[in-house]
Picture (spheres, helix red, strand yellow):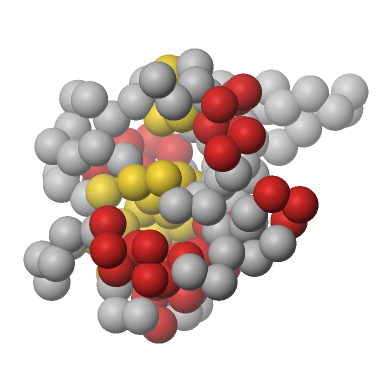
Length: 136
């Protein structure tokens, strides 16, 4: 594994409560229409940095954006989240290569689809972790 490890949504929440920072790598559209994690009960606000831009175009500034937004504290741990836990793996790998300690959230924000294609099976939202609708 080329990053610090995978965390269940519940383990990710525990890590955030210990001082890690959540990095949501979904798109602006996902944040606005599906919701965002609410980390008010932790020490840190989440970072919102798209892994892919509109149309699925890779964000060529991802690491630069991360370096600008993440604290410069060498001991900070970053927890990466996407819709289903796939883009966040790539983001965690890239962050690790850039010198960060990075974890991936298994299941992502929405989780995997059920037999009808609805994302109701698991994930951050479906496991009852704090969520806000939209980025206001």
